[in-house]
Length: 225
Ligand code: PGA
Image (cartoon, rainbow, N blue to C red; front, top):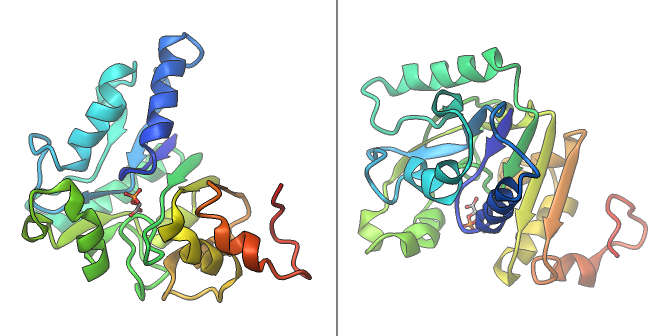
């Protein structure tokens, strides 16, 4: 049971997964997937929706079964029910084995923006000003970025058995530093990962630059080669 992510960060991962599938090294025939989030108001025909993105980037090229794919519907006429059903579906699938995460500049994971309660499960969220600005690059204008989304909550993410967080680029460097060494606080949602028992963080040198520059010498939370 894979928890999948969208955004620029996992595009490389999706490419590797596709080529490993093409080379016959892996199969998705027994995979059930749950994506982190979806914009409110966009359906699968909109090329900015995350369901569209996932089909383009991964699903159309591999042997995952259509009915094993789960992404919250951003056009459901009962959003609360959609959220509850998503949690039920995750539970029925036996929970998420591996959750892939990107991270926002503001420290969000999924669309869990700063200052949301850690105990939230799948829910309706209002997007942060900074997230709207960051994601405007995928739309023809900032005004077109939806203001709301359905997102797995922090609680949902924290229940995943294993988490892999990916980040690249200098603009994530201070967020990554805060995530690893900052206080565990909803102001920086990803800081909650400090208390998850099995998290792997994979970052490039630019995203690691503040960790490399400022790693407290008496800490051994992480090991950087
Ligand atoms: P990005 O987004 O991969 O496009 O930087 C990550 C996120 O907002 O979670």
